[in-house]
Image (cartoon, rainbow, N blue to C red; front, top):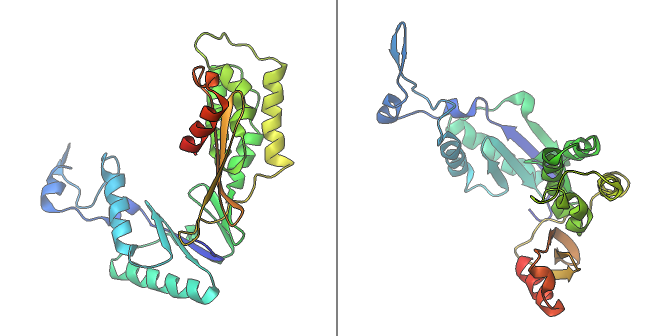
Length: 266
């Protein structure tokens, strides 16, 4: 999506029900009621393979149209210019009409300069984290047990690719999850917790540039006593950050071995 400046998002209405079942598949959905046996003629919710089948069908419908991305029932159309965007959007809507795919108008957004799509905010500047997810992390109370720490880290890891060396910041919190460590919330844990919130509020997570397959990439890595860090860049702009902690065995590596480990990790 390099150079993307204009976006539209489409949401399929009652997605699974728009997929007709063949006769043999329909028979497998038969169910009993006091009024007799019935079977679905369209794909119902609850079937294990339903999501995969629906995603595949939607992808097949739009895969040959440039500037269209699909994720289950969410469809993104983007363009570098308004004219390019409108041409792609028109082609997408015409294809949807040909395939009898219907959308929920109230969940569609057209000709925007920024949209939230699959957990990210896409803008003409680049990719940002979803503001609602950031707000949810900032408003979280201090955890009171290990499960609370797990929930916190699960949410914080979402912003990992936007924040350099996140694993260093969360290191005190991850120590609480070790099996041989009893629950204790000390000042260093509270400090790490508040530092995460400060980074997400006072210093907004960085904007990531859209990956461009036509440009060379550069991988920069760094190591510390307890973690690895990496950033993938194009034209000196970050595409994604990554970091993780070292295992007890890895902490005993020589510095050059840690550097090579960071390269492999990155």
